[in-house]
Amino acid sequence: MNNPLLAALLVALGAAQAGAQTVDVSARVQVAHQGMQASHMDSSGVVVWLTPLQKSALDQPRKPQQYTLAQKDKQFTPHILVVPVGSSINFPNLDPFFHNVFSLFNGKRFDLGLYEGHTSRMVQFDREGVSFIFCNIHPNMGAVVVALSTPYYGVSIPDGTVLLHDVPPGRYRLNVWAENVAVDRLNALGRVVEVSSQNNQLGSLHLQTSGDVMTHHQNKFGDSYEPAPKQPY
Image (cartoon, rainbow, N blue to C red; front, side, top):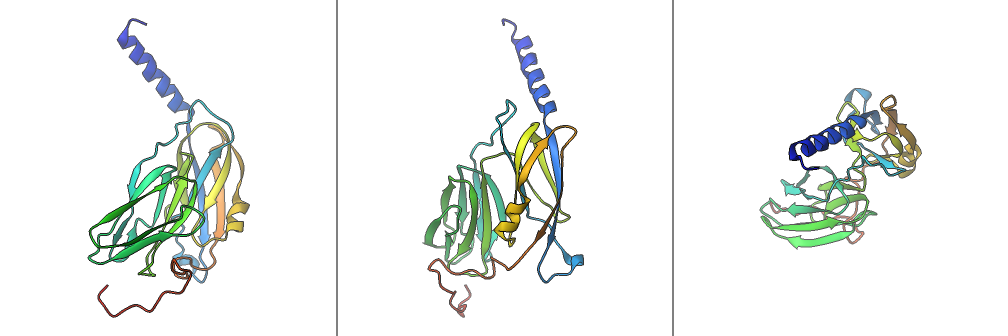
């Protein structure tokens, strides 16, 4: 093809047609929190994703990127972070005292050791899974990293709405993760779904929390945390 303008128009038309074939998929999650009244329920932070059961020409995998999970005022920000597999996360210590970031759960296992304020360390999340992140000094600090190999995911907002954008029609495995919900309950929500322009609703997903991982966890040695020192940190 010798006409650059015509070639560019054809490429743009092809991209527009491909975009038109994808759909936005929605779901509604309802999280019942243990010991909390229904009027105070918050259904945010639930991760819903679709794993393709067949390859599609419209699949656009998310490339690994760099993210930041900051330590500030003895808190991790953000609390929940979803990243593509292979991405790196920077853990800057923005406090004027030491932190120790570690994860010993089934996702990415690591221990960044003790490092001082206004320094930073990085971890690559090279496998799919859920990683619970803690500080070995401050038991009230906790965060979650969800590494996914699919670009089709959404995170619920407080009213429970979840949106998954630009999903090509096809068959998928529905997956759900929510903090403090038992693994068997999450697995029970998994199923095969068919996505099309006429079928883009995943329905309602009901979850019940049990326990509190962020409050009741052990340090990196498998022991209970020592009582908080009287020092300002």
